[in-house]
Length: 271
Image 1 (tube, rainbow, N blue to C red):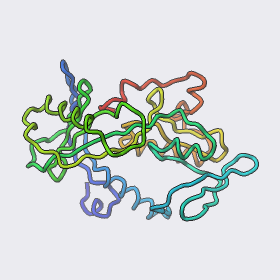
Image 2: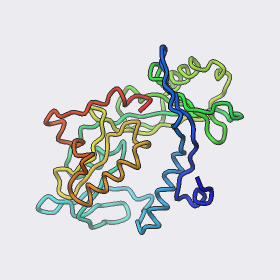
Image 3: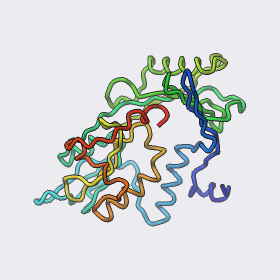
Image 4: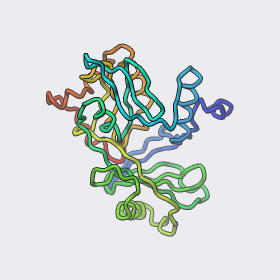
């Protein structure tokens, strides 16, 4: 990757690292795997979008979605005023259900906290990413030397991002089972985010029953890795008011019609 372009934020900082997924009896190694910093990816997209003329408004919460007499979207109400528009794309991760309810739609989603934590910094000792579906944990090492540790979602739905000690303890125990030498490390901090999950563990990228309203949601713990592809399909769907052939099956109506896309096995830690 060209360092000059990375510094401009157009391309996110990324490193080539092998990824290993293991269980008690077998393992798989992906040598072409890599690691990208989440914040660098977000700012890279933001800077590139801004350079193309996209207005990005920060600290601006959506408070309502207006519909005209025909039922179509006509405006979005925010804490900084009303924005008139005929098309709205909702991509709000764990709070998708909250936003869509403003337009009168009930989504087939459940929102769960997902926690992670980091250790004190170390010299480079861990040159790959390891994920275990058997004990539900993953670990990698950041640029600053911290071990980045996480596991599966919390067992209960909710929007609390405070974190739960028993979930953190279970995740740390799992990592120590994989790598006993890490037992001597001290943890620096932990945090929680909200992820939305569909009944069949596959995403929704679709137009809705409300004209002019589109949604991209239900990615569970795999949304970050799917960002480039899902963004392309979502933009296509909004611009043409019809799905791309790839995301055509990923509708809301599949839950009504029984055309589920079962990805529960792939939606675990290693998704």
